[in-house]
Image 1: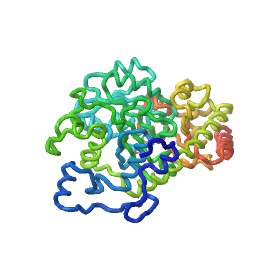
Image 2 (image 1 turned 90 degrees about the vertical axis):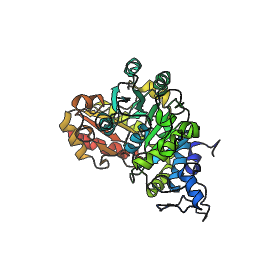
Image 3 (image 1 turned 120 degrees about the vertical axis):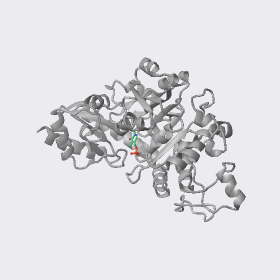
Image 4 (image 1 turned 135 degrees about the vertical axis):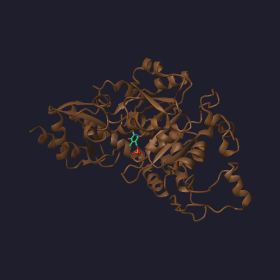
Length: 428
Ligand SMILES: *Cc1c(COP(=O)(O)O)cnc(C)c1O
């Protein structure tokens, strides 16, 4: 719909025409469970997937559909499916690809909850995950086996703000005939479009920067529409007859939209991880200002990271936007508009000083969230990453002396002043 629109125009207009019934200019919240069929034949066509339309809000809802269209457009994908949270998006993204005995390969540098989901919870489905340092492409190649069905990474990764060389990882995935799934939560399509860089699928926690104000949880899966699901016998859910739809083959029938239709017609229908229309509305409003917010987030993050790096009370700062970071070359090449606004720093004085710092910050909110307009702080080792072993904590960049910051869009001087007084209290 938006052939030549720039990012900000797309963020405001994609997926949202005036409401045909009322002329309402903002996307209405269609607070309805079901939709009246025109007649019995219409209902039968919808149920048989011979016609696309609204049946029941577990599968599709017009407010959610507007958000799906907008996120797909911003990411440059063929289609998107929204769901109840970022974690739901990860399970839904893997669901058509995996099966008992199959594995995925994931980066060692991930959101703490994702490490738990992949190392523990998915085992109950008979799936497993191998964690690999994706900076080591030989290790990635060596980890791929006949049962591997996907490679998973975060563009900019939690909690350290490290960056993944998506084009390099995508090349390995392509050679192996495997889909690459990129969690683009921390970069957002404003800083990085993984599909342009070779990713097959993009997942989001819309909870974070996309909504941008800490109001709702939501997730999305965007499909590039480019992967040939029928090239091998590895993806039978997409290439083989589906018994629950009279033997319909998704890839043959829907082409570039096969994965998206499967996500709705099987994923949402049977897993039920549905996004509600109210949440979709908040997220649509948030996305309208995504470009403005991300520009300010990265400007503030760089200023704060540089200030911290030069402070004698600080041992190290992980921000990939800093010239001193080992990831700075990758950041400049793959994420030229900035390395996001989430990073960690280590404080002199270890665990005790880190906890004291968190307790003394006033402008920063101590919460288990990120990507809010407000600046946020958390001590990962005692909270988000506490379920991990010490080895996993350090691999994930969440050691005992490490504090994670999500830099908001307040005035940078006020953010720095707050850190300054809390560092003084913590290291006194
Ligand atoms: C928050 C987050 C998730 C999980 O999203 P929820 O909406 O909280 O379920 C996944 N990945 C990353 C990078 C996140 O920051």
